[in-house]
Amino acid sequence: MTDPHARNLELQVEWYGEPLGGRFRRLLAGLQISQAQLAGILGLSAPMLSQLMSGQRAKISNPSVLSRLFQLEEAVSEPTWPALSKEEREHRLDLIRAAQVSTLTAAPPSTGTPEQTTAGATDPVEIVQSLLRNVASASELEGAAKLLDDQYPDLAEALRILGAGRTQEARTYYTRVTRHG
Image (cartoon, rainbow, N blue to C red; front, side):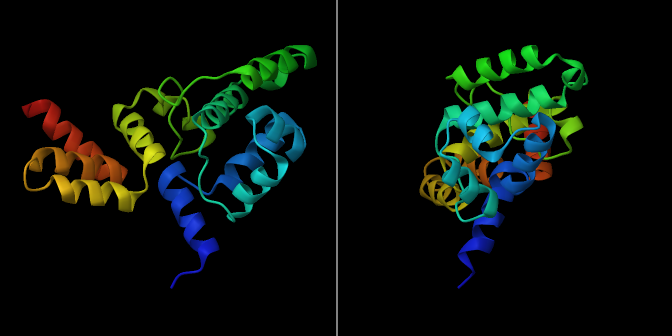
């Protein structure tokens, strides 16, 4: 049996591209705020943020919290962020804090560096992977694909590759399907 902490970190890498601790630490540094303040902006309790950072918990269950995380990452990655006045930064943080946007309208989780975060926002493969991975784990997606195999093998393959496969495999599959219909 695997260590639950290690498993949670593995799941975070699978779902979010890296452990959440790294993502949250970059935000803390970029925003120059405390963990409690970050938790407040995201809409999490401070203990929940700490548990996600340490790998005691694996998943951000609330789509609005995940959306706010993406919005914060996008804001901090903007080259102009450091030059903004304190008032303008606070205003932007207030807008993000109040946001109730779903993950369907937010940028997908980055699998690259913070500089690549906004570049991947239009990648249809990353968007589909983000959506599927926010509603189910890889094992759940594999299970759903298995149930579909007999009657809907093409749909099962799509779910398996786009939902539970590696990003490069998903891109290859996406290219093949969109080129050949």
